[in-house]
Length: 299
DNA sequence: AAGCCGGGGTG
DNA sequence: CACCCAGGCTT
Image (cartoon, rainbow, N blue to C red; front, side, top):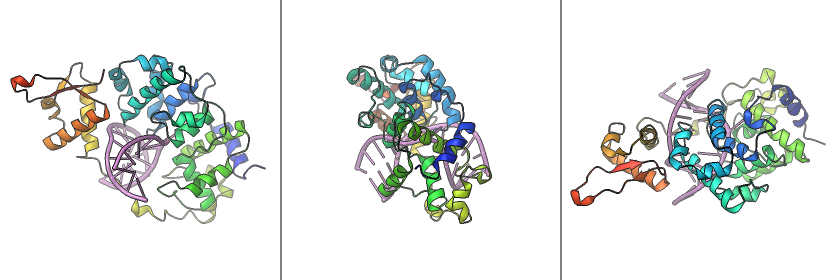
């Protein structure tokens, strides 16, 4: 006996699922992993073209493992959080070194890959291997929070009880469970959206506790505040990475100072990027009093 | 549990 | 301008 939400969401998915390249039967498990890492905090519309180019260039883990890291970071372009690109290449090298270049089929082995957390491991199990798993991303959490709890948005942090409740909704058999995960995620992305949900076309509106309660506003909305953007280290890191991506040659710190004018921030950001392995300082001859260090993307 | 990590599209 | 997006890692 499936959970009441399952049949209508599966039916809706049958007619409203988007045609995404990583959902095509020909897509490899590696292609699914690439898509999931790219989709970590980056919207589908921006990932799609990047994924197409990426998979055409590096179809297998062995291909990506052999690529220069500078090429990988340039191909990542402006998807954001370039550490993900680094980790994806580390994944490729880990697969080549420890799994014969083949994607693992257990959740534990997937969790051992760099950049693969609870969500991504579950997603690969479902979407690449067709296995039952608890795929709990921001979309699924929101759909369940509304339909079952009657609240506008899920709690900021995912709790153990919430995970257990989500697990209880997942159908028992592998194939249906995998399809449910894709379907409920798609519902959250297309209908049960964060901003302006389209309850008028929702297949489970008549089962939804949030709709029944009159769609109350988020109880703890005032506690969600963003860091801001202008002047942050994140913005500065992005500018440094952009300067290095778009240059064919190593870039002196003095040139980056045009993009990051606060010297203290520039120094802090450069040190952080070096520590993260995203940039590499060139060795300079200190005997000549060199005062303008030069950086490049990692080879 | 909280903070950090990009970037762009949207209301 | 604030908010959101198929999260993960560190402290």
